[in-house]
Length: 458
Image (tube, rainbow, N blue to C red):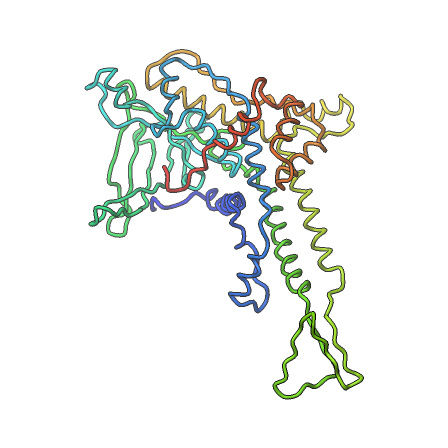
């Protein structure tokens, strides 16, 4: 057994997460297969001719903006509210943190939150000193790729998390005081003799060994649970959910492959190619082409002309690309819809599923539950009582918008042909925008969403 071992679900889902992130970042050239007998230079030119129609990234921006277009409903004790101003001890507010979780849950369908506390005996400090030194609970976000292994045990019929292994990177000192070396370490959270333990494994002599161990306590007592929260697209379970954007990503990458072939075909068929038949030139004779030059041949059978492409091959590629652009718009819109916008009878809709809801709403509700649980743990550790409520916006009121219009708007956003102001106006008309929010605030809410953290962060 090794701390580097990965969970079977991790192994199965890592390629999906990678594909989703590559599509979001526009790094999709590697998904295009090489043509037969292509040299390296030819393949490089082949995949670099088209630009990437990044419907995935634009859809993600729109969905994150929609969830955070209205302020979350928050009701927390004042002491926890102070922590919320810097929930990560890295200058991230609770709102910033929620946006980061939203990006991850929508992008790959999985993210984790560890509630942690500095390993210091706070009894040696006054309350004011502890607050000044930030000796209090805080949250860490872990991307799906960093949560490499986990186990649960059944206790009285309830599954209880018993181990989580987190992959982290850190900067190690070198002989040069101005240079840092980036290394990998593993943080292992487990239950040991029934109580929470945290260990750090680092590489020593080409093997990973435990170099540190902490037995966290709260209010002077050991913890009998691991304060780690899995947040998926639809639940707080440790099982991996399907990435909400995966279907869109698959079509987006397929669309790019069509664009590569289309640009490749246009490159070779649109360039004028001169052809001369029935003429044998003198040795070393060179024929130059120019608007002021005329070719004359003594051979009456000689002909000079431009080779012209004919056929419907490129038209087929153009049609396939257009079909996939429409399909991406529909897939993006479906993340918002909770039922088919057809002329079904009211009774039929009710019978089909009274509890059916959109993917977007499921993500918002799951993140709300995860953040609520996180804040409850913090309150417990600080011995703070009182109700804790945290609910992200789910008032999308999409029934007021026609599904076809929604798909058209999504397609325009993905293509970059519809300005954000038009999307804002239609969302306002559909009562999807918080009352009192102007376009500048709406745009700022999307642009200021924190970028997804890389594996180099904790």
